[in-house]
Image 1 (cartoon, rainbow, N blue to C red):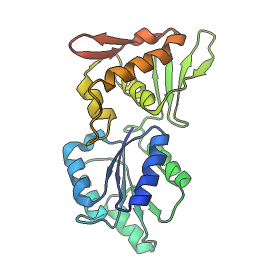
Image 2 (image 1 turned 60 degrees about the horizontal axis):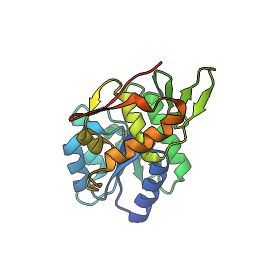
Image 3 (image 1 turned 90 degrees about the vertical axis):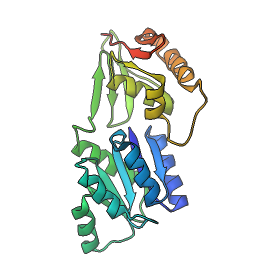
Length: 231
């Protein structure tokens, strides 16, 4: 899942980003409202959730939320702010925010609120993805493989392996290109090495090999990759 984080406080932004990455989110971090606006214009539909600070340089978080709602986007948005008066919360919610978190806050609460937003928007953020004998459970951010005995085996994956398999599970039996994977799974403005996609798929196949399903990720020469559903 990809999150648009908009926070101008460097220490707080770094702390939030670290916590999100540890929980397998892909994070694009904008440090002012203008940069956030650029992300929105480049690809609002890429994001699963937005986390917006209220008081930002150049364009406020409230104005960004209003712009998103004017585009008829239902992107779940969590507003961060030091404003704790009831009337301020009303302004934020009326502008289109879905939840409100007052600074200072703990990362455990932030993550819990994100999980709650995912539950409230099941069409955008399903709680589970089941493809063949593989299940991704967003309640605990784990991926399981169902063995012939019926036992679910927890797949121990790195963050990027998790994100890669998640993307394949969302697009079963479809050809996805290297450029699609780069655009979806790597942060904008942080260009990886040219062979990074092939390298990550090779690592993921090694994790799937002991389960006998490493061949479910096919290389379609000249086009990209395809995740073939197995039962």
